[in-house]
Image (cartoon, rainbow, N blue to C red; front, side):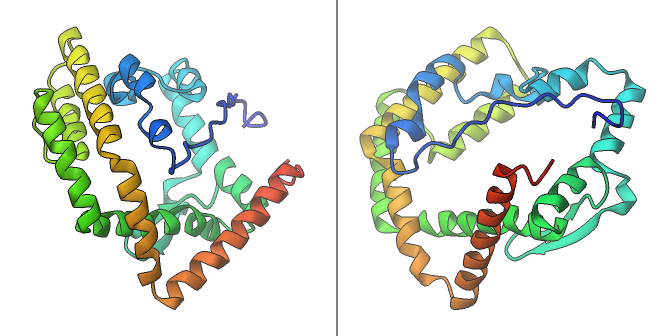
Length: 237
């Protein structure tokens, strides 16, 4: 990007929370500050990364040039089919594609590494919602939420409801309510051990994946390990 006349400020790397640590997954402290983080989403008009802030300083013409430099022409994208997620169009030119090609050798392989495990996890998550242990924890969460004065069928419904409301209002009162619902949701999830129930059920469902899917995931994991090692050695420079 520098060679093309642009900066690309680095964002601080953040490891995802340990999925087996309910407190880390819920992160009540952050919920108390930002709720679900809806007000920090770009759609709410707030920059949320160094790159976003830099991009906002560019003129409309320079933003177009930035997009072209990073992602390449729209008509030069390639299609990747991900089982369970459909087809994705990914850049085959531009700085992003070039960096991914240097690390993974192929932009399609990079897309498969990024999207396939996510697709499998979504499928397992959807199936886990019908499992008795999860349903029992969810019922406990609903009772806890009702006592708190909030009635939602599941945590995702609470998030979606507030997200949709944000499109119509962004008042201080809304932000306060968002924090209240998010904190109640997190508190009840901890009491019901809902994250643990979801994780345990998903892990049990892994055994139901067919051999072809498991072989594919193992191959992609090996590719990803090689990419990480190459990046740590400076192979993407």
